[in-house]
Structures are given as structure tokens and as C-alpha cells.
Figure 1 (tube, rainbow over the protein chains, first blue to last red):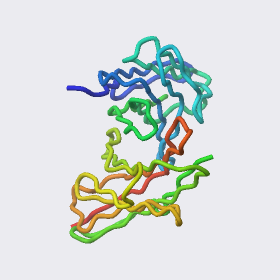
Figure 2 (cartoon, one colour):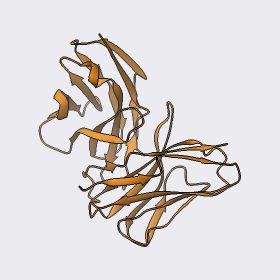
Figure 3 (cartoon, chains in turn red, orange):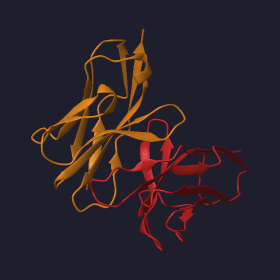
Figure 4 (cartoon, rainbow over the protein chains, first blue to last red):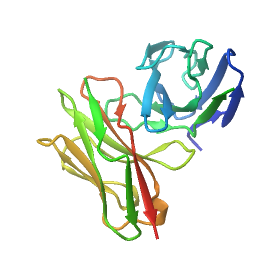
Amino acid sequence: DGGITQSPKYLFRKEGQNVTLSCEQNLNHDAMYWYRQDPGQGLRLIYYSQIVNDFQKGDIAEGYSVSREKKESFPLTVTSAQKNPTAFYLCASARGDPGDTQYFGPGTRLTVL
Amino acid sequence: AQSVTQLDSQVPVFEEAPVELRCNYSSSVSVYLFWYVQYPNQGLQLLLKYLSGSTLVKGINGFEAEFNKSQTSFHLRKPSVHISDTAEYFCAVRGSGYSTLTFGKGTMLLVSP
């Protein structure tokens, strides 16, 4: 089955620790995206990548980092510099054309204690 | 800049009643418009999208939306809702020349028996 996987589903970390969220797709999509979702805030774009080895900051990139070394993988690191990291994180991918549908993974709920 | 306003944060409705979820957008260029649905603790799934052509767009699960350029709106409708339609609905816009989607803050549809 083609799709997007995110792991783990739930993640707990202590304050001050970096944590990496996994996102893998087997849809052969060029573009990948990371969003953060908070109650009542909708989806806010953290980072996106339109091609391997290239990525751009979204609206709320501070305190986050990404890499895109392979077409199918786009991991997100939440660093200790992110002031309020507890949230639901969603990864998506698309072919890359403007009207393309973005396909979403099931999400990772990160709780920082 | 592009933006989306979803006018209602919650819409309560009885089963088998019609529903309209409102979405207005702002963009200085031609747009592509999307409606996504999110069930609790899951990723987003595309309901329908407008790219060009007919302003009435039909999607999955009996939903439809009408693109109104003069009113910059893209309202989502269903003539008869089911309990299973209880979910959060997100409107999104991508302007021509933009690389990313901008999402609204979401509308929670609450269907009761």
C-alpha cells in the first residue's frame, strides 16, 4: 500500500531534550511538508522541501530543523530552542504541482514534560 | 499574501439536516482551493478541490463546494449529514505562484442524533 508513515504515534520527552520525528513516504512524491497543529490554530507550516537536498522555512521554523537526504524521508528535529514544543505534528507529501493534493500521515503527538 | 478565514469554529447540527461550512479566502492571484477533513487523532484527508472550470465541485462522502470568485468564498455543503460526519474540516488555499498551502483554523462539525 502506498502512503505516508509517521512514527511514533505518541512521544514523550523531557524539557531540554532534542527529539526527532520520522516521516517516510512511498508515493514517489517530490514535495514534503511538516505542519504543527494546536487546538483552534489550524495547521501551521514548519518546513517544506520540494526536492532532495533542498528545503525552505515555513511560517514557524524557529526551534526546528529538517533534512532531506532521500526522496522518501523528511525527518523533523524539535530542538531545545523550541519554546513550546507540545503539539500534534503532521507530515504531508505531494507531487509538487500547484493543484496537487497533499497526502497526510497519521501524525505524531509530542508531549514535553 | 494569501489567507483563509473559516467563519465558524463549531457548527452543531442534527443528523439528516443540511449543513454549510463557510470559507473565505484572500489572495491577489488566481487560486486553487481545497477542503480537507480530519477525524480525531488522525491525519487530514482530501474531501474535494477546485482547480479551474465548473464552480461547483463534488467530493467524497456526498460533500460539494461552490467557488465564488466575486465573494472570494468556497463554502462546503452537504444536504443530509450523518453521525459519522462528525469531524474537523479545514479549508486551504494555494495562490498561483505560491509554493505552499495556507490553511484556515478549522470548523468542528458536531452531528447529534
